[in-house]
Length: 513
Image (cartoon, rainbow, N blue to C red; front, side, top):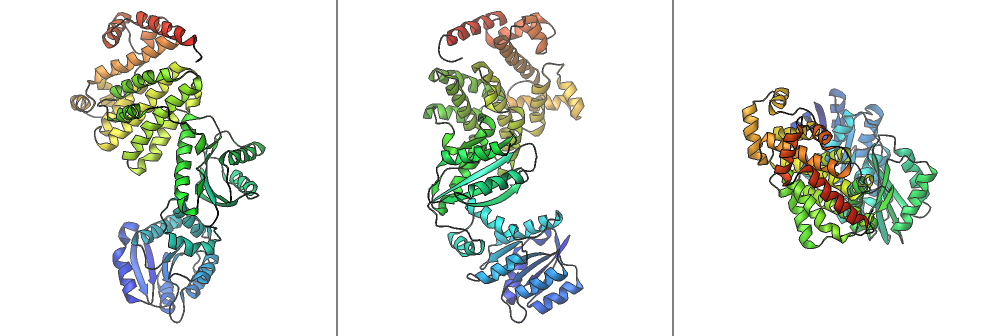
């Protein structure tokens, strides 16, 4: 637990801050107050203080004098300064003394809570205090659209930010192998400063943000400049630069940031390009009716129904494509629309979980050069998104979600509800009831569905014998496999393969390979 000290010459402000902040929830045990700098120094000498929140203008010893003393004697104390509009010189001096944030009166309770939380997080992680904390806080609020225009105009002189350029754009740098991204980001920033005004901030070790301002920004030319830096620096292939839309005026910067995030999501799943602009992501080829069908995939009662809907839709749209690039665009748009639908309705905290899961289990779409392989990719994407979507919206419980994933990962071996229940120490009868209620199918029937779906892929894409395929997907008896296959598809495995070979021969006469 921490101790905080609030210093302000107005007693009403002290009382309001004390009442408005959930101190205990934030981890603060004791909150001391003082109405001038001298009293504050006495409290600092008598008690261990972790966080100082102080007004700047006070009679006698003002906030800056107090802050200078704190920096000399108590360098580890986190400090937040409060002030009225127009006190630029005070803010400049405060930055040199290392503050966590500089908040303007009248105070926003939400912003003060966020600043306190950030200060305590920094304290827990033993980060060095410097002016970049304040700098990054303002830039982050600018690109996310959470700072008012008046406040932004008020604070930009302190940070030397130009709000009056004609064009702006946001670049997101991302790398997935947890190497140090700062050297590459610094090289890129240095090179781009030859043509643009550049502001940078770090989200975390794997992500950095560049804000560009100029009289004119051309996204394609900018991508070439970034790629040139990557090439000359021998940048790791896991680094991606996503360039947001070019916008007119600083007030719309949050749109460029949002577009950059969408572009990064697209690049991670649907593209092999290392540098990509928002303008270069796919152009929609799906009509509104089909778009609605894609969005409804997640509403399917079972994950198998969702997969089936996705594959049927892909087949229906396939006649629109005449090249492998167009097939890629169709598959990527289906995938991106499904993800967007999920993100519209899922809690924000699950976004990173979905991104990590899809990156790990799906991989980039660029790995799949042939149409038949897109089925596997789409099935994985739909499965993982559907499971997370329904587990978060309450229609699928965590244990059933775990059972579904267990089946997906172990279908080729001996899979049974008893074995799963023993592993997770739950009652088999209860799980069986829960599984049927939430998925619409019995546990063993679902296992058979997964095995048959994977057998279909092997029949389409390999020349393995039917007996070998049966064994590969978990059937120990080939006759039983053929019976189950016919029950699911209406035809035998041999007939299914014959039909797919005929379809493939027809496709190869066209332009798509």
